[in-house]
Length: 68
Image 1: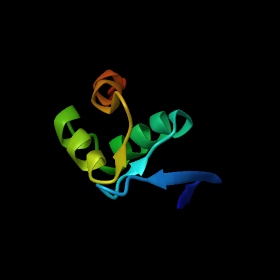
Image 2 (image 1 turned 60 degrees about the vertical axis):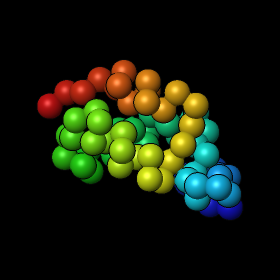
Image 3 (image 1 turned 90 degrees about the horizontal axis):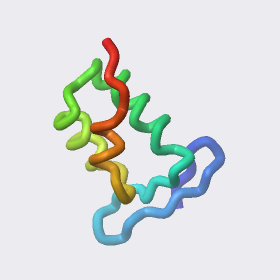
């Protein structure tokens, strides 16, 4: 079990990725966007998929308002 912002998270036993609750999805997208120095959608999604998973993740990353 892992924890982010006092929220206990489950880890997918097959992939080792964090099953991310909806309350953390947008903050995780925003943080990755900033830390990766404004990558494109494809690069950001690939990077995030190494650690996180949730239903509709690709759609959510695509819809994130990219400003720069």
